[in-house]
Image (cartoon, rainbow, N blue to C red; front, side, top):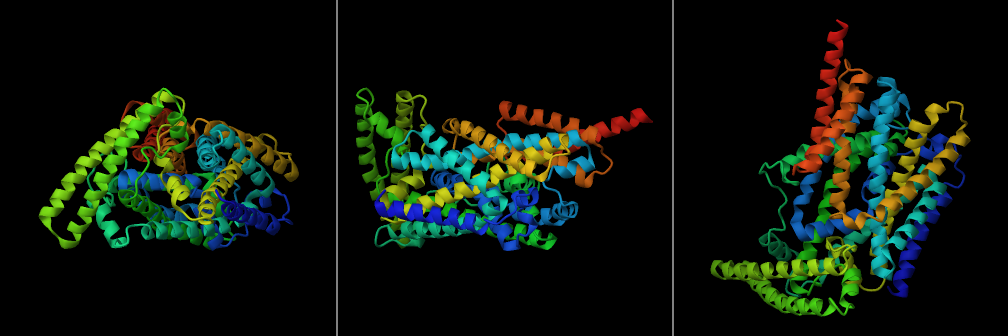
Length: 564
C-alpha cells in the first residue's frame, strides 16, 4: 500500500478507537456499566450495534467471493430474519427487560434450574468462542496478503490488539465505536460498488452488467424448488434461516447483550426492528458487489488463483513453478476468447438477436468449462506444492480487486472497512463471552464477590477467550468459504439453544430435568446428522429445536406417568 493508504487506514482506525475511548473515559467500572453500559442505549445505537456485531470482516471478505462463485442465491439465507426480529421483539424482549438480566441464560435458572442455565451457557460459549476465531482470521487474512506476513503471526498480532481493545473498553466503548464503524463500512461498500461499474468498458453500464450476470446465472435470487440437501433456497431461508435468526438474535449473548443495554422495552424493540429492515438490503448490496466483480472479470483478466500468497510461493518453486506458468499461459489465452464471447453476448442482448445470442452463449459455455478445468488443475497443483496451505481462493476475490485496481487512498479506506468490521464484531463477541463466563459460570458459585472483583474476572475471561479464538483462527485456513463456515458452526448449536428457550417461553408444563436431558440428546443427534448425512446446514436449526421440544415433552410425560 502507498503512504496515503496507510494514512487513511491508520487515521480512520485511530479516530474510531480514540473517539470511543474518549467518550467512555469517565465510565464507572461496575458490572452494569462494563457489560451493559448502564442500560442507557437508544434504539438507533442498538440497531447499529446489532448490525456491526453481525457484520464481521468475514461478511466483507467472503460474501462477495460467495456471490462471484455461486451467484446471489445466498440472499435467501436471510429471508427469515425480518420475521425473526418481530417475534423476538414481541416475546423475548419484554421478558429480558422485566427481569433485568445480564445474560439470556440467567433467565433459564429461574424458569428451570442452574444446570439447564449452565448447559445453555456452555453451548453458547463453545459456538461463539470458535466463531470469534474465524472473525479474527479474516482481518489477519487481509494484513497477511497486504504485507506478506506469515498468516499465523498476523493472527496473533490482530488478536492481541483486539483483546487489548476489548479488555480496556467494555460494552459502552464497543457500542460507541461500532456506530462509527458502521458508517465507514457503508461508505466503503458504496465506493466499491460505484468503482466496479465505473471500471467496466466505456460503452457498458449497470443495466448491461446485470444482463450479463443474469445470462450467466448469477442473479439467482429466489429458488422455490424444495430440496433438503440444498443449502440455499426459499424454503431453507424461511424455515432454517428463520430458526437460525431466532436463536442468534434471541439467545446468543453477543446479540442479546446489544438490546439488553436499551433504556426500555421500546428502545430495544426498535433497535431489533431497525436491524430487520436494514440487514437484507445490506446483504443484497454486498452480494451485488460480488456479482459486479464477476462481470468486471469478464472484461479484465482475473488471476488463475486469487490467493496470491500461496500462488507466489508456488511460482517461485523450481519444481512446481514451470507447471504453474504453463497453466497461466493457457488461462490467458482462454480469457481472450472469453472476453470476445462476452462482448458478443452483450451486443446480442442489446439487439435481441436470438441466433447471435445462442452462438455467444455456446462459445461462453465452452470457454467457461475450460477455465474451470484449468482452475481446478491449478488448485490441485497448489495443494500438492503446499499441502498445509490454504488452496481455496473465493475469500480473496474482493481483496484482490481492492489491492490491484483501486486508486491510492481508497485502498486504505476499503481495508479500514474490513478491519472496522472485524473490530466491532470481535469486540462484541469477546465482551459477550466474558459476561457469560462470569455471570453464568463463575459468579453463581461465588455469591459474595464484589462488583470490582467481577469486572476483574470479566477482563481475565476476555483474555482467555481471545487467546482461544486466536488458537482456533490458526486452523481457519482449513475450512471452506468463511461466511459458510461461520453459519455452519452456528447451525450445529443454535437449534438446541433455541429449543431450550422455546420450551421455557411456551411449554410451561415442562421442568428443568426434562429439558436438560432433551437438550443433550438433541445436540448429540444434530452432531451425528452433520457428520453422517448431506442435509443442508440451515435445517439443523429446525431439527435441533424440534428435537429438544419433542424429547422434553416425552420425558415430561414419562415422568408424570411414573408419579401417577
